[in-house]
Length: 150
Image 1 (cartoon, one colour):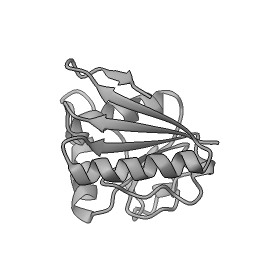
Image 2 (image 1 turned 135 degrees about the horizontal axis):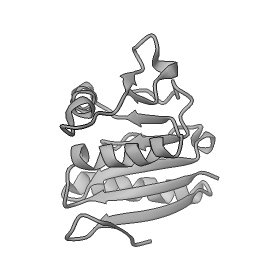
Image 3 (image 1 turned 90 degrees about the vertical axis):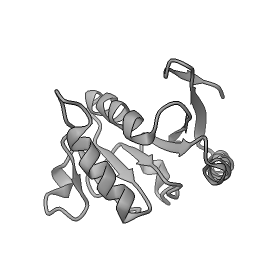
């Protein structure tokens, strides 16, 4: 079954955390897909991946691009896997894809300061466990390092 990792964001926002997780995924040779639920978030992530660091950027596209299938990272609002990604990042409470078993890993990133996001993540945790997936919960410490809590 797929490994599903829950990232409880408390010390840093999504825009700060996501690029480092994507870099690690690309270092492993994985294609990645990022699913949001709003056009505004998708556009903000698209812009941010080009400019998150002065010395670097993450090559990516959206599922609307004609070359989406060849992009190492694809941003989408839909459940499809446009670039054959091995890892999928779900933000804004995006639903687990029906074909979750087709991924090596799914990462659910949620805002720990948002009560609705916490409740949604708990629902997703229960659903993932009930479906037989391996689940893990990661939380940031005071220095911003990730610690596995469950």
